[in-house]
Length: 151
Image (cartoon, rainbow, N blue to C red; front, top):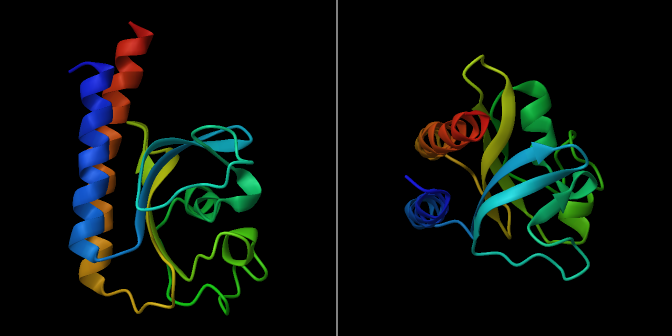
């Protein structure tokens, strides 16, 4: 597959997950220093002040997923103790979050697949399975891209 085909595949994965979950948005992003590089984002538009295709770390709830290397479920972003007064909640209007890490072949977390909702939402176990399954598919594509770039 080419990088363009992979990009289209990641966009389709994000759209399918958003539709299956009935969520506001889905983001597939990779941690890169001071920001998350967006590989796919459907259902949400970043403010113009953000660099193109990047989410600055202070606005990325997904940072916690990569650091913990574990899925994160937030049903009510306004009251969750991990993200009190978080800019993504205050300024971007995120009300609920469900994210799973993507991994390199060595098991290191390098990014996330995350579903976002504008309002409080009680995520179900099946929702997490869908997000984790999409993360496995996305990491396979991104790891293949990384291996191709190393050749």
